[in-house]
Length: 277
Image (cartoon, one colour):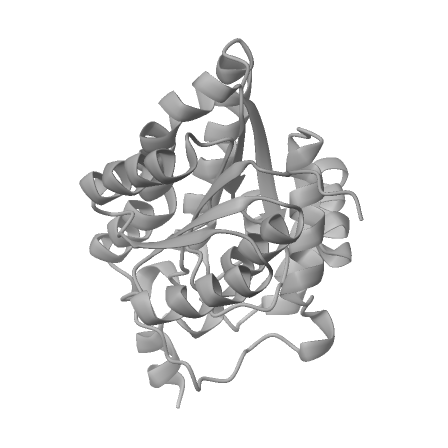
């Protein structure tokens, strides 16, 4: 097997589970040494041990993307341990759900603090090292960063912001030799749908997405790593994700009609729902 990232240093946030963990393992399979960054030390250690069992080096660094100083420290440690950073993937995130009228601005701010500003601070932390190596930057947005749906306005807004940021800095960083890949997954096996609006994981919660629509993380990770290696900008992951993005780009009016018909009357505020009982 061709090892595309042989001897390179890869830095990943949100690497303790889901897509982040799967990407870390795939990069290691491709010959990389990996810095795993996230809040949960025990889960990071599990991923680290899996990578070391593959014969690759990995370090686990506890950090919180809403605390920029921890990102700076994590990136510096990665660079010291592996001699620099060749690839960085800003993956950490979660989803706030609910009809806009049931939410308040504090929840929107919390959503943006992690999904947008946490991602932006990750970029700032790793950028000097990427410029030095003319490296690769992966930014995890979502299919939701291309098409809005009811009941997800906070999450969708944060991911639209990530996609817009990626579109702009793609040009800016190209002049510095750094490629930008905007990663837009559809439904992938992940804990994200088991995390509540306060960012708390409910490990035993049932995934609301039908299992037949959920793509295994290892399959998604292989696609993501391939896009990053090729320095492609658009990395739309999952078949249904590709269809939704295509429809939103070329037939947005049809998408709105379909979503409206499919969700009519189902997205009322809780106070109105109670009034109907």
